[in-house]
Image (spheres, rainbow, N blue to C red):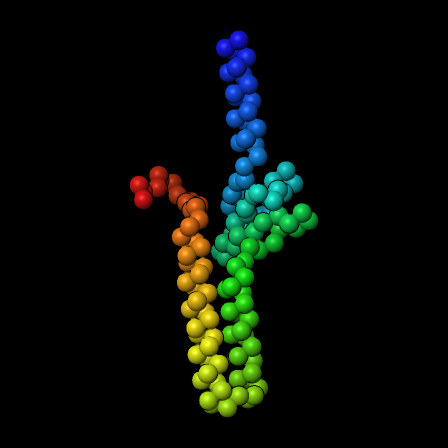
Length: 129
């Protein structure tokens, strides 16, 4: 009976472990067996270290909506400046707004990042912190 109980516990633990995601650190796309939504691929191509997730048919970059919205706003301001659509007062206001938006995005992204786990890639054990 104890043997059956231990075997059941081991099977349950293995099933739980099999359902967890893993982090794959490579410059080549993970094998078909690792194409799971819970897995994270750190694509090291060109030294970019781009985090990607499997969306069911392809590996897609993981992005933060606030940061991408701020980048889009900054790109719009930049394009309009290069096309001379703004006066100096408009430009100053747009730059200030983009700066505030970007600062908020950075703060929000940092707060989110601070609450997440870390992936530590090292040949030595992580520090106590």
